[in-house]
Image (cartoon, helix red, strand yellow):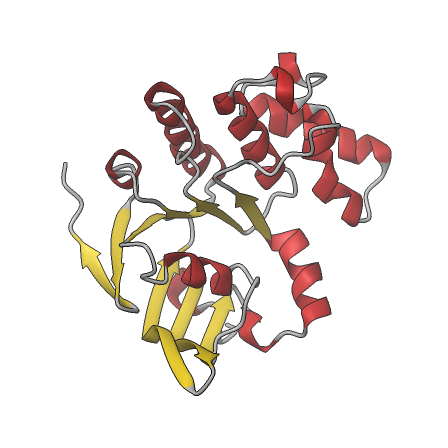
Amino acid sequence: MEHGDVNGMIVRVEGVHKFFRRGSERLDVLNGLSLEVPEGEFLGLMGPSGSGKTTLLNLIAGLDKPSEGEVWVGDQRVSAMSESQLARWRTRHVGFVFQFYHLLPVLSAYENVELPLLLLRLSAAQRRQQVLTALELVGLSDRMDHRPGQLSGGQQQRVGIARAIVTDPTLIVADEPTGDLDARSAEEILNLLVELRKSLRKTILLVTHDPRAAVRADRLMHLDKGRLVEHQATA
């Protein structure tokens, strides 16, 4: 078994430090942090603003590199990859869900979902099949020709989730996915994420301030001053 895939852990963060320099001052965001996430887990990350939640998510998703320590996803040591290797790896292995959707307004829902597939070697027929499957999974088959401006916030976030799962990624990383939604839409998006975890066995990492989102997670970690503390989930 490869070093990065020990005991069925899909994510392994080992002794990670992340610091930034501001002049002569060193700002520590993550301090010797370690984390293991088993395959198929829905992990919630909470903590005050500036606690390093998004930094940790970005390190796992290959958007940033640790100052010290290692990040493994499956048997890949993400923290050792070059920028070009990371770009290729992210395209195939990470599905991103953002707070403000990041959809292109001039494209239809179908075209927005198709975008990540254009970077992969797939035939037009294969792309179409994967886009239609993703849109069906999020319940938007009947809205595929609509542009984002013709959709509600909740529907736009569903398009965002369809785009995240269309490549069948190893990980789904969601940064405040309900942060811009009303309570009902937020509830629907959380139901959808839970359903995707169950039906597709997806590993989901969720950063949130929303207690309603946090209780849906299988496990909840609290990040404060660059360190992780596990919270016992309440029934």
